[in-house]
Amino acid sequence: MDKTKDLEKLKKNTKEAEDSFDFSFNLDEMTAAGLQFGHKTSKVHPKMQQYISGARNAIHIVDVEKSAQKLKEALIFIKQVVSDGKTILFIGTKIQVKALVKEIAMECGFPYVNERWLGGTFTNFEIIKKRVAYFNDLIDKKQKGELEKYTKKERLQIDRKLEDLEKKFGGIKVMDKLPNIIFVLDIKKDLIAVKEAKAKGIKVVGISDTNTNPELLDYAIPANDDAVSSAKYILEKVKEVVLANKSKI
Image 1: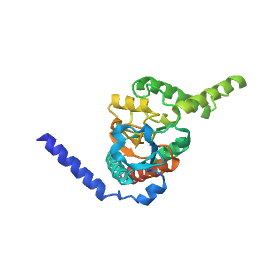
Image 2 (image 1 turned 180 degrees about the horizontal axis):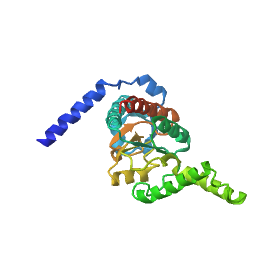
Image 3 (image 1 turned 30 degrees about the vertical axis):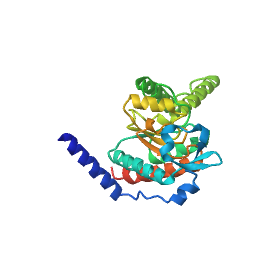
Image 4 (image 1 turned 90 degrees about the vertical axis):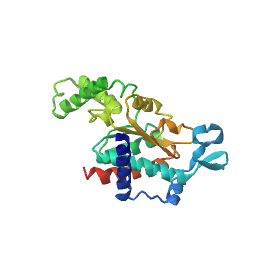
């Protein structure tokens, strides 16, 4: 009986999410952004075959209609969790998307990782929290001028340490607990993050290109994970949903 009630509640929440936000997508815009371009046909992951419509010049082409459907499902889920006041951690460490990930995450008011994923960020979170606390303490001391008592050489060493800590923890320095969701732009490059999230029961949403396994994700969006234009199109849609619903919390 309880399972029936839970299912009815989920259907109701999904219907409300669809009614309160425009989840329709222009397929021409998606194509212009390059979402359809996959990897070489020789590198296909068998689980991605269901999302492929054909090939062009030995490159697999993703069915953008299926991309749109899966993007819609992911956004409805994101809308629900954001409306509940939960947190998304954006992860994108490829050189071409680093700046974009930081920009979108900051506009959404959520943490991010756009440098190398530090193993244990989730599975050894208490240790990470101590390092972040140390980093924040150094920032606070510098802002208050408390580092002026050190020699010029010592201050230079501290500044270098701050630069290193900024790279490692800058995007998560306000994350005092594990996120509820991670959004991953490249599940192959940041596979460790995906595995750690799974181990801690964190939901995983992200882009699944033709050379990756979509079953690693709770909500997989079949699309190009290499082109900045593709990542930007998807992240902008995520941002729209987040900002429209964070304001209602």
